[in-house]
Image 1 (cartoon, rainbow, N blue to C red):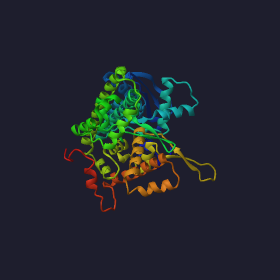
Image 2: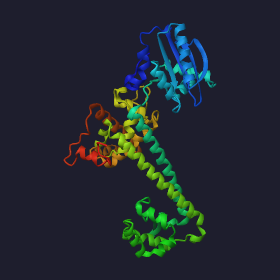
Image 3: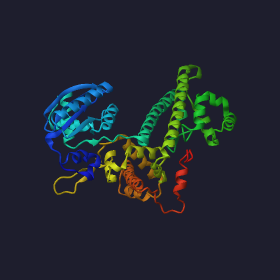
Image 4: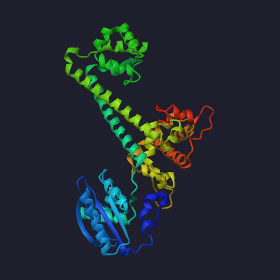
Length: 452
């Protein structure tokens, strides 16, 4: 059983390391198929002989006692020296089983369901039953395609939960934004932008540079119809801007009055249902925004106590992106090279090569942690725009004709290498520039004091 540590990392070589030198006649395998309610397991030896046929158990004290009792019974019957548990990572339902068995001293190995699926294809097994799944899990374990059972814990786990929950709220808000645009388009379509013919070409002009800015949202909430804007007039809009600190510029006032004057919207009395829906959606948007801010504050409170704070010394990397990358990478002791983390993210390019040719790089593999992959992409996008130290890298790829999204991925992978080195060596970002100070770079990204 060969070890490809440079590619798979320490996590993927754990089973081979533990089984080395063992008497295979005295090795037990315990594959576990996980679901939300009822779990199934069987106990076999290394050569596939069944010692305990498949049985069901639940994740409670009675069920876990049954599982452990059956394992110990089989262990005693064949005087087994080593027991390996293989369990599919199904949602979050497997985590309690892993935790309990690990605490009991068993060697537990987590298996990606995709590995089981590939094993099924290799065996030409198109029938899917629980017993077949258990055998496939055992095959994957023997094939050294599992990881060890060190689940994220402590600050890693807390940050994972918070950043993923925040991302869920971001997605909800994005959906609400689209609904707000759609419903307000039925009330006053020109508010989101109006078109004019200039030099024989149609040009679209936007009233607000930021549709979701303070001034725009205030008018959407209190004066969503063109007739209401016309009733206010220039003087009224100026007064509103001063009273509520909306900072609406003169050019913006001119554009909004022009758009209101050109509007062909229905009379406001015919839009009662649309106005009501808009009002409710804006409340949802406001609530989600406050919720996201609360998540970000809690993320910051935990993150500033971790070594991940070093990532904030990189210009262009914000608090949430740094926290996402730090917690999704996890414990770096599992890895020897940054390329192993890139593979975990699934942002490693696939290589197509055959015969004597050098081959070529294809698309990214997308086989790995989707949350880490998203964070890597976002980090690369931000660095391309805001990090002058890495600007030459961006320029070089641009001059080679690389597409924008590919450059973002390449920049994100470069950041993973930088982050890996920084965290391994406990050192901040190195940038020889008289205007750069890593202390100032960190402080401008925080809202809480570092002692909080």
